[in-house]
Length: 257
Image 1 (cartoon, one colour):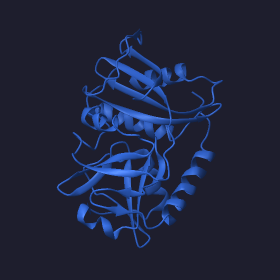
Image 2 (image 1 turned 90 degrees about the vertical axis):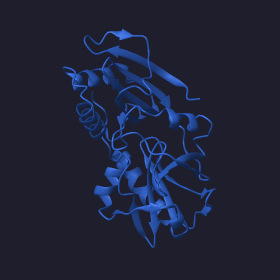
Image 3 (image 1 turned 90 degrees about the horizontal axis):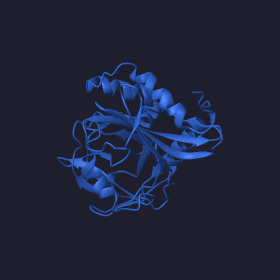
Image 4 (image 1 turned 45 degrees about the horizontal axis):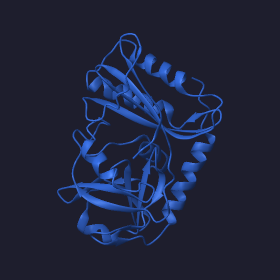
């Protein structure tokens, strides 16, 4: 189970703190941001906030001053004197804004995926309908493994992140039915060579690398998939992407609130 080091909820109309609700499976959206160092850096902060506000508008959670209120709560709950390597989650529905903080767990090199026949509800958005995914993840050591969602034999995304597939030094991403996270968008702009392709389960053997990318995971090379059996053949592109990502977070500006 995830241990929350901070958990608070605030009602929209006056930002009064109320009893904490994690809001999982309610009608709303969320974003999870990586916070590092002292004073804090929030990696890809503007992108996370812009994605969140865009999704809130789609879900018609158009509360007055909601962006300013979210920014105010982030500033209120980040400690300038604390050294971070944490994940900061902001969730909102029609009644409240909930925030939480947890320690980031570093993925291991022998990372594996487990295929699950499931597509998220409205997968283009980071909505809160995650009950089924959370039920799978709570049974796993998420430093060693994640689930990979597929539907109609096409792989979509992991339970927490995006997936990239490498064949003959060409990098591919699934076409649709998944959430395009901030880390994927960063690499898409940075590399300008990620191609869109349907990734079929029965074609996995032809890929040398599978790479997990996301706010929580960072950049992770998949070592294996049990069924159907797949084994990593190279670390070449993982090392390239990992270096690019590390440079980006090293150079990312401090959070000024």
